[in-house]
Every structure is written in C-alpha cells, then in structure tokens.
Length: 357
Image (cartoon, rainbow, N blue to C red):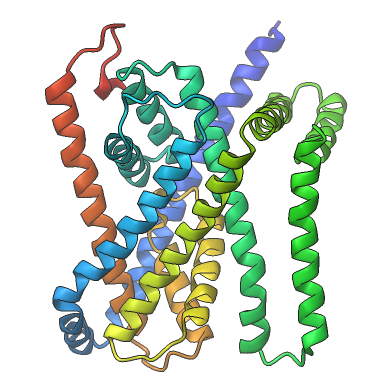
C-alpha cells in the first residue's frame, strides 16, 4: 500500500518531467520558428542595417546599464537594514552575475536568486535577509511592469484606431491611479495586496487536499503579503523610491528600442517604443518557461514592430540580433565577474561554494 507521501512524491516527479518536456518542446519550437523566418529573409539587407548600428552599440549598452543600475538601487532599498560594507558597485556585480545565470539556466529566476544569496552570504548577509529583499524587489519590478502596461493602453488604442474620446482615456487613467492608491492604502492598513488570490487558492487547497502546489502557492502569497506590509510600514520612503526606480528601469527598455530604430533611420516616437516594450514584456511572460525566451522574444519583436507600423519587413531580425548581442555582452560581463569572484573568494567560511549555487 502506498503512503500519501509516496503518492505526492510520484506526482511531483510526474509534474517535473512534464515541465521539463514542455521546456524542451517550447525551445525547439522557438528555434524552428526563428530559423523558418530568417531563412526567408534578405540577409544582405540585414547586414547593411547592422552596419548602421556600428559604434552606436555603445549607446545601447549605456541605456541598459542605466536601467540595470536603477534596479540595483531599488534592490538595495529593499533591504530592511542594508549593510554599509557592501558597496553599490559590488551589489551591481552580484546582481549581474545572478541575472546572467538566470538567462542561461533552465530554472531561470530561481537559479539566479540562489546564486545572489550565496554571494551575499559571503558578504556576511544572512540568507533570510537576502530572500526577503529578493521578494520585495521582484514584486516591485512586476508591479511597476503592470503600471507600464496600463500606460501602454493609450498607445494600443491609438494604433488600433479605436474611437476613444479624451474623457474615456481620462477615465482609464483615473482607474489606474485609483488602483495604485488602493494598493498603497491596503498596505498601510495591513491588509496586503495578495490576500484575495491567496484566500481563493487556500479554499481550493481545502477542496483538493492532495494538491501540494496549491497549498505552497497560497502559503507563499501570504508570506509575500506579510513581508510587503511589514516593509511598507517601516520603510515607506524606501518602498516608494524602489517602486519609482523599478518603473523607470522599464522606460530604459523602451529607450533601447527608440535608439535602435532611430539609428536605423526610422523616426519612431518614444511612446510607440513604450508600446513595443509592453507587448514584448507580455510575450516574454507567456514564454517564461523557455530558457532565454529564444524564439519567443524574436517573434514578439516582429509582431510589435508591425504593430507600430515600422515598414521594413527585415527590421525585426536586425533589432533581434542587436538586442541579443546586447544580452550576450551583459551575460559575458556577468560570467567574467563570476570567475573573478570564484578566484577571489573560493570556499566560504560555512562550507558553501559559489559554484554549487
């Protein structure tokens, strides 16, 4: 007779296998789709377009560096008590190492955050403090992304030629602002922002008692709520500043599109590039289980550039190549920094090794 723990373990193994197969299938489909599009494109024209970027690539690196720096400062503000001995440049390096691993590791964010925690532990920052800072920082990044998506609604209305009067747009803006105020109000009252979905999942977990995933997700939501409430209660200025920095970092993602397209001779507006960034953000969210979102991000570039009426049929491939080159540049920086950290620190005092993360 099988014990409940054995049944739960078998289900977990089955889910893990299914998840792994889904990742491999999604990655294969993305690569196949990408090959199909590229093989039918004018490679000579793409090469000519890439020449227009040339040394201007450094401006793209500068734009992304600014965005990454803003997120790093927001992360620094997300610590309850930030230790002064860890400088901002060092925190930037640690974040870049973790994000680089997240880009190439099948477990994505989990692997990156685990490595950051190990590196911070070497700087005498307890794991618990690191994990809480990750939770708050990551939540603010996602919440600021939702805010940007709401702002992008205006551009979508305009591009789709919807007959929307200024009063309706003002109403949409008012709703967005009201939701933000409600979010702050609930935190201030100690009610949290995830209590409703957490309660729903807890109810489902009671109806399906063998579903450990439902119980774990509901419990994790309650933990996040408690951490957000406590942090907002004690660090209001840090909370709001971190949110504003996280939001601003997304705008530098739009700035990258703005620079690339203008370097290539397409006079697009910055607001249109915000719409592109929003659309690609949604595509990447849907395909988050695929390592590096290979194929997903490229197809998103194609769809969103067509959406803002960029005329050249090959331009999305050029943009994709440039953005992947920028991504590889920062992954390379993270990898070099990782090697330097291993060489400098080696074995930690508590027996943990960096490369075991």
